[in-house]
Image 1 (cartoon, rainbow, N blue to C red):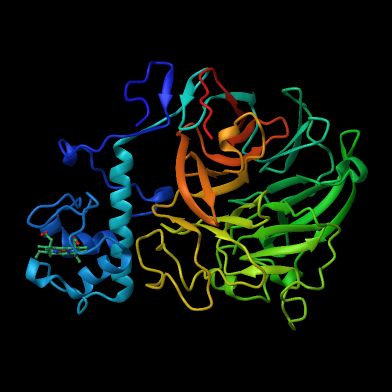
Image 2 (image 1 turned 90 degrees about the vertical axis):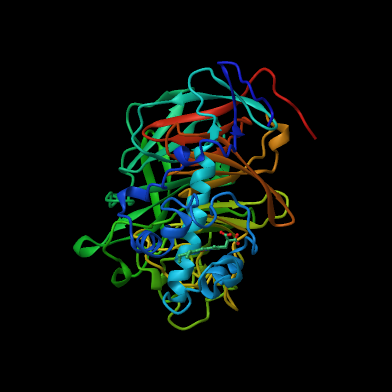
Length: 487
Ligand code: HEC
């Protein structure tokens, strides 16, 4: 705890106050996301477990399951074993005969969710407004509005001359120059299917923009009969118009799908002439395992759209040759480690089980065969969290934060943050700093929470850290007086 008594204009990024007194009053059930109904797992709990452990897991005849103190071990396997085989000497009956392995797994996820919700209820997070200074672990900062009045700003990219490009989900590409939003969007950008999660998605600027002038866009491309699929184009901006457009990725028409969810998508240039991009599984979870479909995949192409000959499925008959890795749910974050070159993706999970992965060619990331989550309605997806031939996440989050964009900080205004990974989240409305060592996340810090859904985070060329906040704001983190420099 850095500062237990913050002054009115100074917030500590997170103060954890775990008090046993008043525990019952503070515990609340985690609201299920996006209004989904309480589902089966809550019913199982109420009907089978609540009589001993309490309706809200706070204990009764048997112990509380919220205090993170475990008599029989606290990892997922121990919890499942306690439920399956019982701890009969201690008075815990076995439920392996009446509950399926999937139901037991859902109960473990449920216990994790409730525990985390309880912990969060007792944690104060910074929610900076105006000129509030946040004292985080390594730096004091303010969140300064750069431009407001946008409509769901999806992605931010910078031109070498300092102008900022912003996509609005509804289909507009906007330009911000010296803090002012140009009133007219760029004319002539592709028509997008702007329904549900679909629309104009990522924007990126070619690494050699000064020579080439290329700007890259990904979007939900409308197909026949109200179908859509993520597509990628590049073009140039000239006199406020989108010109010279080239299509770099467009799936065959018969693979376009109905449905309003999981389009991905983010770009990463790797500095060697390749472009990586992501497509979510479009709500068809089994497609993530099917390499004849583009959805649920990370893709790699040359920056002009050609297929690299050494792509892992380039020679496999029927496969989509741009596929780099598969078994992804909805990867909305993609970033390259500036020190190691490792490619990371952040994936929005189901209820529980958001993931950060290191993406390697040809590998299977497991969705939906393995997952740390369950369905939104509390019914199980599977009891498997690991399987031979499938990759484990670097880290996973239950309950889901609704992870979105990620970026490594490479600026010099926050020296203590250099090369850390920043993660934005939608439902949890958090900006999280992750310290990575040897391909593992060794520390996480919530920098702020609750000032809007955070859809993009970008290490700006001027050394500030930029975020897009819903409903319509681009803001940046700027160092404040009192910044502490460690390391
Ligand atoms: C008849 C009462 C009873 C019922 C019903 C019951 N439990 Fe228990 N449970 C216990 C007791 C007693 C213990 C031993 C710990 C303690 O001293 O409270 C225990 C232990 C546990 C543990 C291990 C805790 C640890 O510290 O390692 C877990 C996990 C657990 N129960 C989950 C459940 C779940 C999930 C259900 C419903 C499927 C359930 N229990 C139903 C009485 C019960």
